[in-house]
Length: 246
Length: 220
Image (tube, rainbow over all chains, first blue to last red):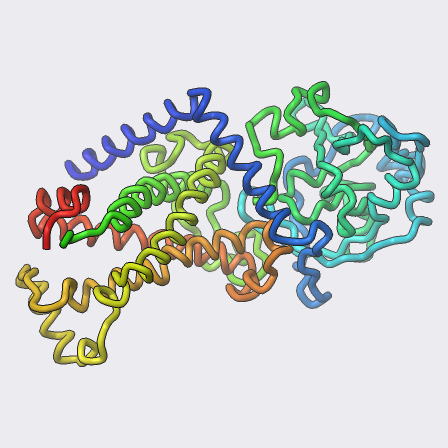
């Protein structure tokens, strides 16, 4: 028992020192910078449009786990559910020449991409599913993004713990061929627990970067004025990394 | 001649700091999802081969559950850890530490020689004639430098969805992302086991001299 107490003591001292480091300006900026080094290394080591692995139908998981919000408890969303999402709109706006408002019918008529990919949650688990939808790049090209555009912000009907869920990515990930607006999972309309009727697939990043219940795509030059300024719901609230490729 | 050259000493202490931070922040990350799987995917207890315990605060960085802060520490310390490993291998090959001290000879693998070495260890007789390290030491250092530490870097890279596009063969090499995650966990405890044995043997073989020599270099 004594050795354990000594170990615990040493552990506590070390952990205490670590939280002191994290509280200092240099410590905190180092911890932030590391995330950027990984992003730059990933981008330097592979072609920016290099694809992540796509699987065969035999690899698909028996079901696809729903995580985070698995329903949206608002009257507006429940009305959309009962209407079969017939009146759902996806707004495309911000720094674009042609703002758009798309129905699911419009989205289904666009050229589609189907991909069987692995979804990796920040918690550690993975699931494989087949997703179908138009590429985000196609919609951004149609909308005509301005030269000042730097980030794409995703708005959602998702109301997690009473706050609006949102996420953002840069243009490299936005134009990636596997970045799609999915309306189907495993050949059927997206289930509510997985983000019906629309969710993003951003395959080179972890699951919290793939917003569900998508209502709007906003093109911006800076993330400072969006949410609390860190680029996403979890980034604002819990300090999650904005670049979630690690 | 120095007992430990400068490259070895520098790497030893930087690596110790990195491994401690990576191990303790890793246990915090492990607390986010307690099940380990084989293959590409896995997300529910019935698919798991192991449910690991939840690690208490005194074992983790930070000392409360925070996946975000633990990941910050983990991905920061990964840089000096991986670059340090690269440096140490380059140095070991260049300064002949590997060829001279760590490489085993065929003679050492003979059962009688191994038995003799085990008996000498059990008698706590750490004098060895001729070469700098005895067989069990070479085996332990070889395992940790050649397999466990590099294995942590490669299995860590294989877990990263952003790195996958650069080297999809790496994920396949481990048999899938969830296999890589399981191996990451197993190797972490392998390194912990090495750490315990290493510290115990240092304590049994004149700890003051051992630690001093790993700082100043000592004399052979």
